[in-house]
Image (cartoon, rainbow, N blue to C red):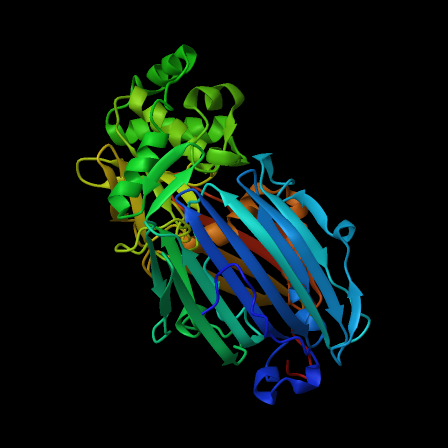
Length: 508
C-alpha cells in the first residue's frame, strides 16, 4: 500500500484512445482512464488532499467533463495545479500554465456574503476523442467532512481505474460507509493507518426514468471524522444528538429582537384566538418583510445571522430566516425548533451522523396535537407547505438537549394532483373554441406556482411557447390561488382554432 499523499509511480500515462476496451466506450461520452484520490488526516482540524485524474472525452456530448473545477475557501488552499491536454493517440498537445486557470467567486451572482472560491479551467480540442489530465493538492485548516468517492463521475461516463486512499494519524478516529460488496483494504504504516478502495472497468450507466439511483449501481465510499474542529469551534459526529448539540450552541444568543420588532409582534398577535392563528400572522409577516439571500462566509455557512440584524436589513439565508421566525414566535410565547434538512436529498441516515447529508434549514413548531413545519425562504408558500423536496424524509431537529431525528410530513398521491377538463366546441364553419381548466395541488402547485408570480405579458408568452394546438390563437387566460392558505391553484386557458376540423362533402 502506498502512502496517501503520494501518487502511484506506475499510474497509466498512455492515453491512446484506441486502447480503451469496447465495453467502456459503449453508451459512454467520456472515460475516466485513471483517478487517484488521496487524503491524509493530520489532526482533528487539519488534512490534505492530493488528487489526479485523466479523462478521455469521446465526443461533444462529453464536453461537460472536460474541465477542472475545484472549490476552496479561507479554511483551505489549492496549489501545485498541473493540467495537460492529449490528442486521440495520447500525444501531448498542451501543458497549461497557472495563468490559464481562473480564480473566481463560486456563486457571486447568488450570494452577497460568500467566501467560497473556484479554481477553473476549461479544456478545448478541435477534434475528438481527446484526453485531459490534471492534478492538484489542497490543504485544510478546519475539517467538518472528509472527501467522499464514487467509482464513476456521472451518467454516460465509464471508468477504467479509480482509487481512494485515506491515511490517518494515530489517535484520530474516522468512520465510513461503503457500497455493498466493496472491499476495504487497511494496513498500519508506522503509527498511522491507511485505508484503500479500488474500482476497475466500470461500464457507463444510461440514465433512465425511475432508476434505482447511482448509489445502488456503482461503488462508493462516504467518510466522516468522529471529532471535528472548524472556525474555533469543536464537536463530534458520534451521533446526531451530539451534532445537534453543536448546532444548538452555534445558535445560542442569536434570537434577540429589537424593541420595535417586539412591539410589532405583540401588535400582530394581540387578537389571535389560538397558537395556529399566531403562527399564521407571524409567518405572513416574515414573508412580506424579508427576502432570501445566500450566505457562505466561514462559520456563517452554518451559523445564522443574528435575528436582530435580519430585522434591520430584511434579508437572510435559510438559517437566518428560520432563526428570525423562531425569534418572532418566541416573542409571541410559542416555542419552535430549527430543522437541518436535505432539500432534494435522501433522508438523513439515522445511524450515521455526518456533514454533507443536509443542505438546508427550515423551522418546526410543535403544538399540542401536531407539528407545523415552515419553509422560511419562500415568500409565497402557504403556511405549513414545505414543498416536495423537503417532504417525507428524516431530518434533524435541534433542541436544547441536542439533535433528534424526526420526519417531515408526506404528501400522498391524492394530495399531489393535476386535474384537467378540456371542452372543445365546433362551429358549422369548422372553427373551434377550446377551454382548458386545470387545478393543481401540492407538488403540482409547487411546479406551476411560478405562473402566479409573473406579469400577464410573460404569462401569455409562456402559454404560447407551450401550446401544441394547430393554428390556435390564445383568447384569454387566468391563474388564481383562491385560498392563500392552501397549496392549490387553478388555471383557465381559452383558445380558438380553425384547423381542428376539416369538412369533406356533407361530413366533417
